[in-house]
Length: 387
Image (tube, rainbow, N blue to C red; front, side, top):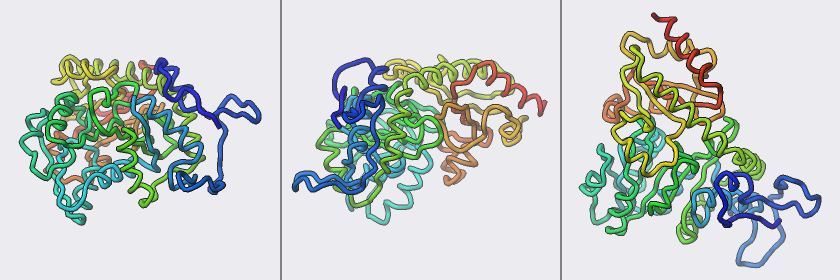
């Protein structure tokens, strides 16, 4: 069950394939063997293997792979992105503590904060700005965590990771980032000093719209602290799904690179159309944070959003698509689109959506790996049904 390439410095493309692999010493199989056991022999009090302890062979191997891709020391794998988000926050906060969060967050994260934190006596502040000065204004004596998401969902705003790290370190505050939209291929926040990196592995890491999972990457010390809560919350992932996720990640680099290419082409196309009011994509020179994105991202990602002009019915546009799927999630190999108002951010109030810049005409698009011309033609044919 030896693992190879866990920390050896190789190219990211190679790491996606080989980091964290389990070696099949019995039959010499070319892929990681799957260990389905939920009970292992007693190994002494230091570490006994059990699925809820996140330390079965497949769990540990996958953690090595994800940690390697994010340049972290270690990782821990969960049953969903929200399990990773909630555990990372609750393991670092207690009653009386305060957390600062950017306003532009995944709707599920925001709903979790608003609904659950008051029960635990945890204070929180949402800030509308994206600069470190906006965060600095909200720092209190009891501030313990700064939580960010960049690029943000769904308005693709960019936050300066280096400046957030400098601010947090000067005040002894832990930094947490949801890196789902970028993926490890496009952005590695630990390189900029961020303490904890979260992924909804359901998205780019899984990449085929058939896996629900989450991941946290950090230092050994941080993960030990998170583990103390995680083992009690019971959010571990089944070993079969762990094995499927490790398999899917072998093509992560190739998938994301093609999704980057398609997203940039689609964004450039949409920006010049009369039936589009605005395009949100950090790869466009018109994006207000384009230069910052170039500085801290290795690729601009497969996610973009756009506002249809008032004359186009947003719902009819989505239902009129024939190749692009109007579906809930994102980051699969197939291109998908949705209305944030009606789906991902439906739990927010109208005021909260307005404050984030989410309007009734906004469409969030997740670029897949199909041919760009086919995707462009599908968008055009849906528009023509209304013009």
